[in-house]
Amino acid sequence: MPIANATSATTVADPTQALYHKITWKLIPFLCFCYLAAYLDRINIGFAKLQMLDQLHFSETAFGLGAGLFFVGYILFEVPSNLVLEKVGAKIWIARIMITWGLLSACTMLVTSTTQFYILRFLLGAAEAGFLPGVLFYLTTWFPTHRRGRIIALFMIGLPLSSVIGGPLSGWVMGHFDQVNGLRGWQWLFLIEAVPSVLLGILTFWALPNHFRQAKWLNEEEKAVLESELKNDEASSPDSKQHFRDGFFNLKVWMLGGIDFSILLSAYAMGFWMPTFIRNAGITDTFHIGVLTALPSVAALLGMLLIGASSDKHRERRWHIIVPFFIGAAAMATSTFFTHNVVATVALFAIASAAIIGAVPVFFSLPATFLKGTAAATGFALACSLANIAGLVSNSLMGVAIDLTGSSAGALWFFAGCLILSSFLVIALPAKLVNR
Image (cartoon, rainbow, N blue to C red; front, side, top):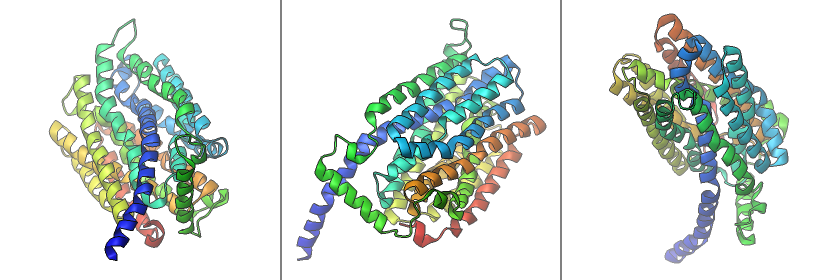
């Protein structure tokens, strides 16, 4: 009898597993490439800095402020953008986001003054606002809670992949296209790396159904199974909030914003300034800098997949965030003692990236454990808005620290301390609420 039951269970489970496998392959690779393009256009400024500062006579502080102003636009338009996405659907709004940010990123090649630089970075942030929280909200309409850690990890590998691919690519473009047709390498960089965003934005109209009911590649039986799974998931959390005020005026959402703030302080420090760290360690060739920049991102990719899968397997979220925070903070702080050693710099930032960025998918599985519908759309966007203040703080603080002291050590120690402090916010989240 037990054997019969086991066989029956396997028979029942397999079609559901096959269904989610099908959905994953239809949605996640495309969304991953979109995120890769988004992040590439966001952080390629770190490579462009290696040439444009000298040519345009920008100070480190001016660059840090310009890089940070991206996040002012991003923060201001995050919540409104996600609310619009919920109303008009992912297909139209994600396409709009990608096409406009691609065009604005390309326009950065025309910058000749700090004022122009500041304005374009602000507009780029406003254009991209809503993409990440919008996709995360969109995924909650396809996958139940206990499957989201791995799925979000698969989607978000676009983040480290942007550096794995973008690092060597950016270094190669800047080295080989410099002075071609009268343009500097950094100008070609913005132009070439904007093209994928625009093309993917156009493809979004065909690639993304607004709802699983509109997916032509699912039959009616599959849609019924998916609807049942999502309803059962919602029933497992009967106290979930669903209205705008429940997402905006929610202490847990503000706590999540604080946790993500500490993540992004470190992530943006590594994403924007890694080429500078490697150059300061003694590497001058832009292609070699690009290759070395990719190594911590490979570690981050592996960290995301392993930590996300482990969190789903054990249905545990809090310690899958806290432990990586401590490891990442220790590695980042230790790196300040080896600023002139290339091997140690790359290795320590690889550990920091694997731990800190590896915990991101687990973190982003949390809001939908206690929010649904409009509240989830609002909560995702609000948490991301609060967190992205870190982009302005991280880049500005790093630029000021380097200009004033000639070293990034003070800023990196501050970022490591913020990770440790935010661990207490993670502990404060009720285990019975988030560990599902």
